[in-house]
Image (cartoon, rainbow, N blue to C red):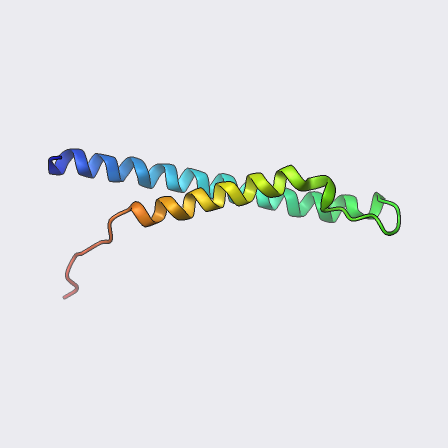
Length: 81
């Protein structure tokens, strides 16, 4: 694989990693707001997190994918003066 194609691949991986990170962050923030706002409307003794199970899995999956993709990006090997 030549250098130009490799740089393009790393750029695509970087963009996908950033998108999945911000999507995971947004879904986690939505989940926290949902739990905080709707916990007052639930009956006493009811856990607000069990109703939000799919959102927890979505947020964790997106953040995990972002973490794995961040390991695939090359490190910046520029020499510091």
